[in-house]
Each structure stands twice: as C-alpha cells, then as structure tokens.
Image (cartoon, rainbow, N blue to C red; front, side, top):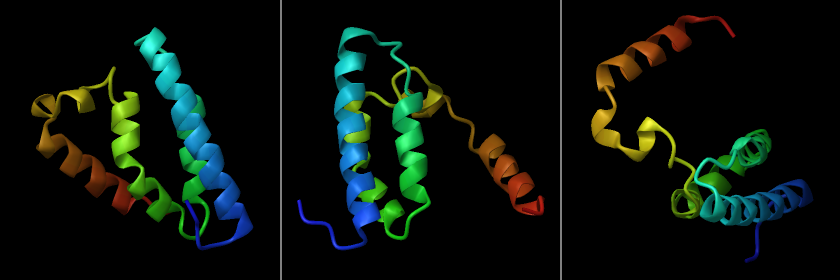
Length: 96
C-alpha cells in the first residue's frame, strides 16, 4: 500500500499495521490480551497530519482483531447515548 504523506506517517502506519496483526494473534490465543500497545500506536498516529485518515481506513481491521471484544462497545445495544452526550459536553467545556 502506498501512502502519500510524510516519512513519519508512513512509518507510523506500518508500525500500526504490525501492532494490529500482533494484537489479532494475541487475541486469538487469549480473549483478554491487553490492547495498550495497539492503542499507543493509534495515539501516535493521531499526532501526525493524516493520521486520523489512516486510522479510519483501518477500522474494519481493528474490529476484526477484537479491539472492542472485552468492552461495552462490543455490545452497542448496552451503550447509553445520554451518558455519552453528557461526557462530550463536559469535555468540550474544559479548557484545554
């Protein structure tokens, strides 16, 4: 896959792809495998111009790898939109 963007974005994208693959292998062996390494790679991508686009294109891979497997996000019917709306309103009002 050819990425248009900086060398830093290209490297971060490749590192993220590797982290997804590692996480998927770990999750297939242990449904409680930690996701912090993968999430840290995602955070690094978010700091780069174009990083959110890279993440967006990999949403299916993240879901297939099981990133939401041990959370309420794996069962969206359990989520309560009213609570999320309040969380977003509070975070928007906090000076950053």
